[in-house]
Amino acid sequence: MSSSDFHCVLDARAQLGECPRWDERERVLYWVDILQPALHRFDPATGVDQVFALPEHIGCFSLREGGGFIAGLRSGVWTLDDSARPVTQLAANPEDVRTSRFNDGRCDAAGRFFAGTIDEPKAGGHAHLYRYADGRLESLSSGLLTSNGLAFSPDGQWLYHSDTPNFTIYRRAYDAATGQSGASEVWARIEPSAEDRGRPDGAAIDAEGYYWSAFYEGSRVVRFAPDGTVDAVYPVPVSCPTMCAFGGDDLRTLYITTARAGRSADELQRQPLAGGLFAMRTDVPGLAEPRWRESA
Image (cartoon, rainbow, N blue to C red):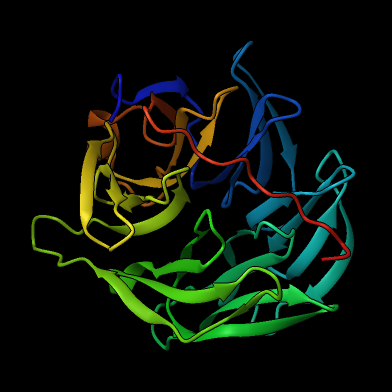
């Protein structure tokens, strides 16, 4: 499936790199560092990584039709300008912002924005997956620890998301015309061991409808078939890959963000590229990332 292994394209030293997004118009990769809150703009043609600092944690974002971004910050869902400056709060975080922030999210093909939260103490299962529509947040799933891995099948019939600490990926029937979804069902469950605590973090869907999941603390990306079985496994040279995205002019470069927060000094010595941005060529292309439309 791959023509090469993952290699580091940017030694970013991110604390918690996340949410890579390929902008096919600018031919650049946007991504975030949640804990050193900033939106990054990486140009693979020049190797330049431009950093836009933010005043609070940013978990996810989508490109906005017409310019700028929509983003899930700690305090809620915001619009950002072209330099990632917060402009308008569209919806407040309905949870306790002392222990909750927005985490993984993206738009569906119609330009609707979906974003989940993280229960930072991971004690009460207070996180949700939300859809932002008609000026408000609607909860689609509750009782989560870390809402993650949001993706949509190419035909728009399935919505996928994971609860990372519970080692589970869910799916639900999805109506792309209305944005409504059916009941959540377990699609894939990962069995951890004492030696392997790899668990499903951020994800991307390829043009064949296969789901690529970054396994946090698992040093790998796993490609799942549409029936939930494992199709292929790709090693990553650091412990904590966080999310993948297809990019490049042919959408056949798979980019991976990674993290170094919480890693021991010994591990960082053995993995000095932790927190870097990695890339690998793939045989199957991905899909262009939808942009947020205010009218969606």
